[in-house]
Length: 333
Image (tube, rainbow, N blue to C red; front, side, top):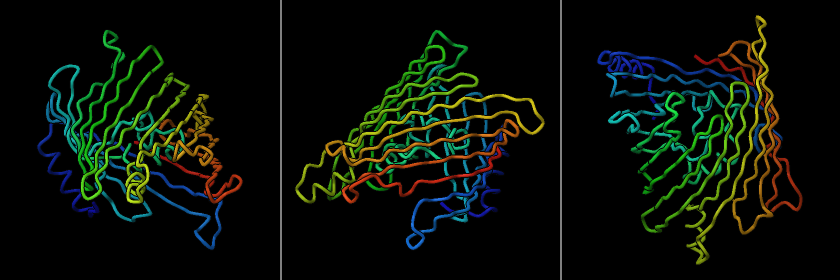
């Protein structure tokens, strides 16, 4: 949904005038990407910029709303990325209604500006393309773990969605918190109607360690691809196509107290994605080595080397096409 700046101001003014409290947060980023690809097909260098403005609107202790606006140099426009209404009925039961991000996997719980890497993983992007992520019009019942309430060391999400392409479904995520460790499982059911109806199931599991200066997470996915299933069904082939994916991320922040250097954070991400689990010889391996330099706790310069090894039916050996080098400056507020 593309909207003008004046419309954004009008929407925000309407919410602000009827709210008790409004908080703003977001980020701005600009960067440069180098790609390993032929210039006769696509550019092998790219500059970009993007930003986010999020308004948290509090009406009372039980009712809150959120508006999330995004803009970037690719679309050269501002869009309303998310609207949600949050309701608290009970202490450990909240409801959200709106265009909500689906918490399928640990990575989807992390905002773009809080990622250790510049972009989300290749695995996350691929499973999101076939319905296991991104945002949907939905209703979500949930509870997020509070360290001050150790008598209930759980988080849960129950998510029911519907979109404009005949898809609907439900997802659940359950997490157990044990000190710095988080153990989680996911299940998602989705169904597409129309002339070629299909149902699909997805499973996920992840383990994360969250400390003050150290992060580590392992994600595993086994998801059915409904789009490929429909294409194969039209050819009278088996429509139960499952994709497999796994990622591991680790980062450690070395703190400093210099005027223009508050921390150096090296990181690594490795992952593998297999589009068809029955043909595991065709896959993509991703390896990211990076480092974040914190000029301030909300200002960081980021370097990512994203090396990809791709083996498909068209490659007798691994190809490194689409590998990237990324440089970015990011400011959060």
